[in-house]
Length: 183
Image (cartoon, rainbow, N blue to C red; front, side):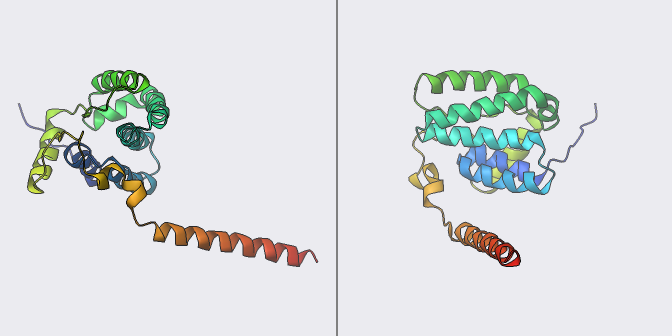
């Protein structure tokens, strides 16, 4: 039997390495969101983004937020199963693990590490990349560093804030220009 090699987007591999080796779910979101936007906003990528953000919220104790995101993931799973298979994810196992995670979060049980069930080839690629960076695959993240746990609170937001201020100024200028035109 001949071994078949499949190429996966590097952003996807990076997401999986972050997901399983650093457990930086916020970074997972950042990596895949950029890829998702640049590549047609395919729902499969959104599903993976929302999974990471849901786990980020659960680990931080925001159970309501995590449950909302897990609900969104279930809706996307119902529509997008075959694309996950093409990415080397066992959809049925993912759904079962997410159902268990949902129940745990709904009951307020403590956060436990979560793994996306991957086919051997994809896991091998990701384990190799993690190893090259000195990272431990399937890291137990129950005592993760505070900088990872609260990433969204600790990150530099100056670029985002500057962009928002610029957009607000443009909207105000357009509004001002329109009001001057009607006078």
